[in-house]
Length: 321
Image (tube, helix red, strand yellow):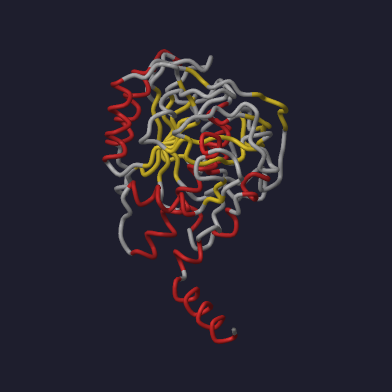
């Protein structure tokens, strides 16, 4: 298992903006009702994270190292690669008047380092991290609601599949990158039916040429020239389905807060997935390329959150007609 191939286009000392991909998904428009993801814990299974990055240090609630980096010290989950820090920023970079802002800027992150500084790791690392995430509990009783995995391997491993099933059966939404081969094939865990398989589009909503295609693609999100946090307290522009995946994971955190407030109960994993799919719009591609379509957090939003307003508007329109 390893990092999916990705491109580092540029490294920046500073970047003061809400990234274009986050705006394209209209996350800022739902920040208020979703409480910016506050109280939701997302576990990132990747290369670790720069824990003292100015945009991330207040968002990290815990972590663990499952690799041999730092002599296998489980409490050292820093990032010597860059990939994991970039993913973390897209999900959760804080609103602090500097740098970038993430999809859910008040979400909490559990950093689970399963890939070493070279971007490599065994399935056993990933399985152990999944099980750790399911058992983890924060100081105030917090539990992981979402797993974000921007990695993959060619082998369909039964033990890995079993771990994924344990996660979804536990009510945890599992969001995975589809791959960057540009071919029709499956990589794992992104190719499993139980996960939310994520493909990539550019900022014009055109399918990325590298986005892997298969029947398990569920949604597409921005994954081309994405600016986010990077080690050294810097920022970088990267491309890959690895970059699309944290957009979806962050969106799911917002959706959880939106819907659980309205329904006044905890949503099941299947219900979270259904609400996510309601917020998609087709781009006109085959399903193996886009799944349900592009994730836009304002699509279907009124129908879910303000049914009386919609019903009133419809009745007024009938009277006016």
